[in-house]
Length: 330
Ligand SMILES: [Zn+2]
Ligand SMILES: [Zn+2]
Image 1 (cartoon, protein in one colour):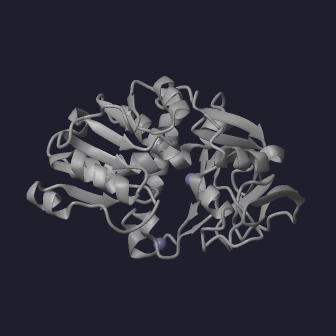
Image 2: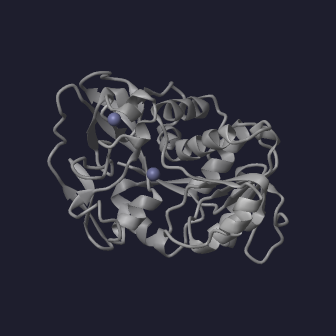
């Protein structure tokens, strides 16, 4: 089959590779749409020690099952494979499973390819009429969905009443803002330095968008801050913005370390939590919300052939892509 193979730092090549070999009971899915994730870009730059070349990247995928259980179904893929038997899996917190594996992290090859093998428990049937390019984005959207569900647990009042500021308007930031609409939040702000991206965000939903030198919400007035960068600077901003009794959800992975004003957080009882991916239930709920049209019209995606995937990574590096998400079509 054809696949876009990561062969070394900043190098992707289309190549003929062996067909995926399903483990016992697994399905093989013919991929029709697969999103490029920020983590794919990190891997491409050679900065992800878990993803060693040669490797097929890509984990935000949808397609049609061509063999094994669910043959013939159109599906979106939950790329996180977990053991199902550990304490976390039994508690339905599968994202914390110590044996979790993900498409595109060895030993599992990724979905920038014509076909991929995956357990049928990880497949969600997509209704006819829902484009697979939209269904493929259940994965990144589920990350924001999960963050908001955890945040809601920390609130005294209904989360829908809260003002939300999202720091960073990439796919995870925008996905969180779109998920917030589904949660009933109306007062949503997104901070994004890239002007082309700000334009795109303004069209994607009823959000207030602001850049680095533009006026945003006042310090100390925001009950819910989602940090979709996870850098020292964004953590500093998060703690400044948070209202007394507020909540900061830290979802970005730009760099560990400093930035939090822990004295202010202590005196003002600000809750801070890290949030990683999604549970199986979050994934299914997000997929259902996509199918029901609750994530809108996906005007913020751009589709390209998988054959042109290497160029898409170059364009993303050059910041010449306006869309929040590039979806490749094998
Ligand atoms: Zn992703
Ligand atoms: Zn487990």
